Structures are given as structure tokens and as C-alpha cells.
Length: 80
Ligand SMILES: [Zn+2]
Image (tube, rainbow, N blue to C red; front, top):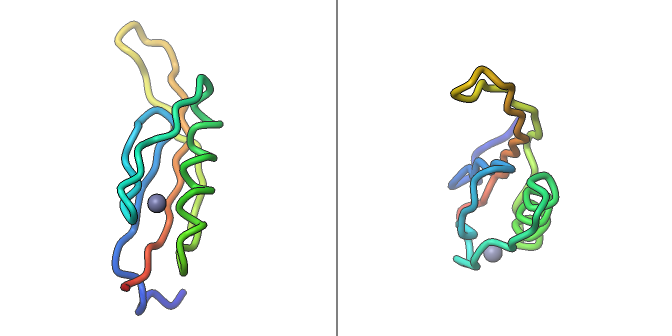
């Protein structure tokens, strides 16, 4: 993978709201976490040169031992 033109890598999660690292747009609020993540990724990919590098599932455990699942995505943001 050629990463020479990549200035920044954005890590996005289905359970973490964040502003767009390129244009500072506020997060699109949706009820479903995966839907929220998809809208964040779709928005980022609208910016010139942004590329989706990876999508994955993460599992962690809550305070009562319950399983928490979240989706993560990594988007490369090119140097401007
Ligand atoms: Zn943006």
C-alpha cells in the first residue's frame, strides 16, 4: 500500500460521535450506531482523495460482563 500522500488517518467508531476531520461538519445523529458510522464514512469519502482503508468489528465487555460490539472504520485523508 502506498501511503506517501496520506497526511492523516481518521479512525471512526459506531459508538463515538466526532466532527469531520476535513471540514469540521458536525456528526449526523442516527439511532443506529452502524448507520451513524456509515453516514460518517460516506461523508468523508465525498472529500477529494479520501479512501476507506479498513472496516472491522470490535468486541469489548461492559461493567456487568455483557458483550459490547462496535464497528470501526479507518479512512485515509490525503495531504492537501
Ligand atoms: Zn467533511
